[in-house]
Length: 489
Ligand SMILES: [Zn+2]
Image 1 (tube, rainbow, N blue to C red):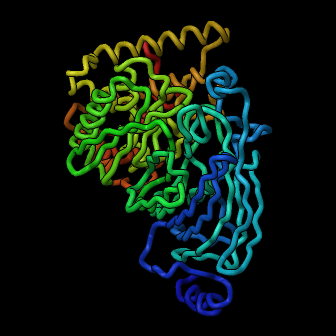
Image 2: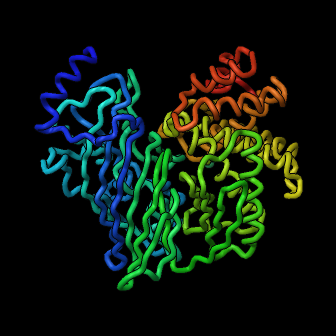
Image 3: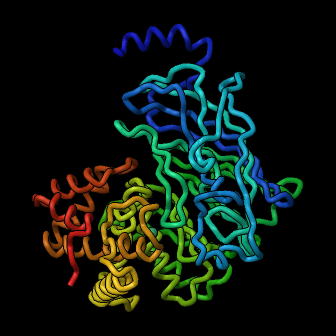
């Protein structure tokens, strides 16, 4: 359909049904979240106004949103934890939660919606009128999240309440593939989203301290309730954590305010220092962190950590200064590889996890004061990987699948996922660095960061970007690693 026809059609239908957002120049979608946390009921009530911008080349009659919170249902088929980690996940016995969609409106009109997907994981909204490329539509989604008592991205534990992936977030639309609607997985981080602008108003009992994505613009306290106003621009997701136990220390690095919220870490100054050193190192080597705030948040999370834009969760199960340190560097590296440069974490987890883990090792290569020897880290990764291949080949009685380019649900076990994504990812990027040399490798990372800032890069786009920066033909190199053809001896 040609542009002129679209314009004429718009003039006819706009006054009737379509409520645009009034900002023709806006390219990113915008989420306005009005949230209220009810501590007694362990409920988050939300009104989400989403100004969805159709930046694709096709028109839509329906919009799809992930309902990641539904993975915490008792009857969920794709649970967020493995059987092996179930005890760590539930501090007080099994507990479940979900998200309920009460209504979807456009203006005053109630819209038809359905909960679809193979695990009640998708909200499908019928639009009032066809949404053409470059047009926007304003929807209002009224929802309620019931929290499970679980040490996870979403849920309450003994020390803190995590609100990760809690609200309906638009599915990414890929030309040729349509909307990407992958389900939750106990392997990896099963997320994929576009950058958007966020405005959030949130209320919670004033006994809590709150850390979030974005920047807190103002806050006031009244009748035992704190209300905060937050803004986050060009961020891929929005997350927050509440705790009554948080202590907080801050420092600034090149105009970025780093806040460390913690309650268990007895080496908090060291943890904040490594966070500052990480931002300085990644700024210098990959490109500037483009936001004003970075919150490092200790919380009850079953293991390791978890990355969100401007906020990283650090598990309170870390048992030593060096463990806190390692997790903090890794999660902060994700601000570059996941946060600013996105990718489909479900279908190509190696892309962000492999590069993030390798970035962590590059940090230690330069920051020798942390007493982690880079060569030893690489040697350990090599021997750990070889050990995994040997043990799993012996157990299965046949060669273990070592391909990296698999969807999260195609990894048979969690160790298989970890070794093929993180460990093998490290070995792949290290081999590439040795092949093209330090200077060209750094240039490739800087160019990749610059070219794909606030976008999602497919594996092919990443490889093409690296080829352009280094002058090497790298498709066969990457393919041999990703397919599992490379043997590590
Ligand atoms: Zn990671």
